[in-house]
Length: 405
Image (cartoon, rainbow, N blue to C red; front, side, top):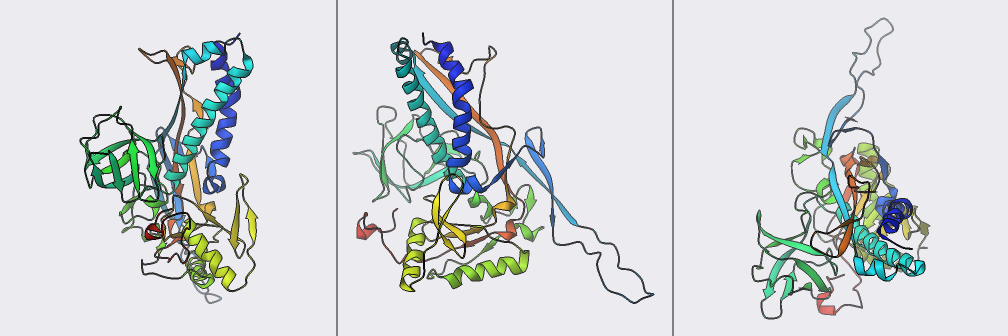
């Protein structure tokens, strides 16, 4: 007979391994290429030494002359705080009891709940990989007080079911839950559940963050390529090698030559061998159009996790919804490590159970957790090409708003 204990054991012994594999390998093409490590963790922080430049104790000389002066490696200490990544699952007591005598129904119940948790976690992990660690998903442009529809600068980081907080500076403005019910991707608008929040405090120029996440997410590519001087506890002014290669925002056509210029710069100046290119779907369509115009073969590669993509001279070119419309990243994924205290685990109570009753409610919840941070050992060995013109519009969106994806 199915019970709370049965559900608890299933979550701990059956589902956690499957979920961890899906989130580590199948959540995002870039994440699948990044190595994971539990080394260099001291308490709640990642502390590791990294080298830059070369050993200077090399030189030529006369047969009886002085030997080169010893000059060892250049070291810098990287320090970053482990971020807390959570996923919450909830099952009602009624649902469990209704499937008590039907093991098939019980299995379906858990499978549906786990599928929803994996989908939500995969979306947010992918978003964080290209984010700046702030948790910001959009900036409000306008609010229609009559229809309760919010217009944003972009909705590419929003999805139905997401729960948000609105901030004006460091002040949280919403007193209720902003739960997204519909995203109008053609017009950069979204609606929210007005039964949970009236929306009266929302206004233009407020910034939307994932609930409880402001300033607490992993340091993704947005952080790596930001204009901020500090990263991993070091100053880019003091250590210029922390600043990756970036082009200006001048409009430019995508081409093999444009990509090769960045590849050559990285190889000549850092010795970097780029093995992963990420871009928006608009830029990928423009690159495909370029290849077709010059009658070049479009080669396809299959990546870890079963992802398939086109390539540039053997380097996979992956379109990701979280990359800005005019942007292409050129990355050496060997320089990235997801440092983690442990793999995805359920938080267990003192009695060893992962399912616990929510106070005052006939529901049970379980929390999936991972303590991790993304570190790039060689930021200067990565590149970002900005200002790429999208020569192909999306036929599924209005021509007047081709900027949406």
